[in-house]
Image (tube, rainbow, N blue to C red; front, side, top):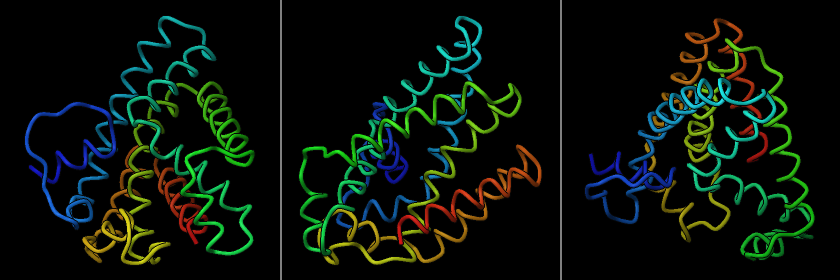
Length: 211
């Protein structure tokens, strides 16, 4: 249970009781729970969607739901997205790493966050009701499968240093492929063949972006 507690605390701001697994490689060893945390998050978002759509117009409900989504996850992935986009301005790897370590946000990062949130809100508002709830369950799972695939495929930007290196060091080589298959299976169960294709394209896009 210690690994599950660590996964929940790392991926969300939900306060869970108990003692998490300790150690340098603990996060990598807890990565098998990432898709489970994503599934719980997705189920919670789908439930929140029903309540918000009963109370507000579609666009307002979409804005509120995305707000809840990003708040519950602590915005950890948004921070990473902004850092990565700002890093594109670097002339060489050393300069890119220096930019990404800087806590200040640059133009690329700010524009990227605005467009990302706008895309999320408008997509949610425009989707049909049955597909919207099912995609809300699928999306957080796929998002938490992606780092397992990336960690098994690519080296950390700073080998031997930082959280990324510790994560990869404790990651099982089977975690990525098995979780990827589980994401495809969930997509198929929720949306049929289209769901598996959506999950596959999303994971492929994540790998290309990471590369």
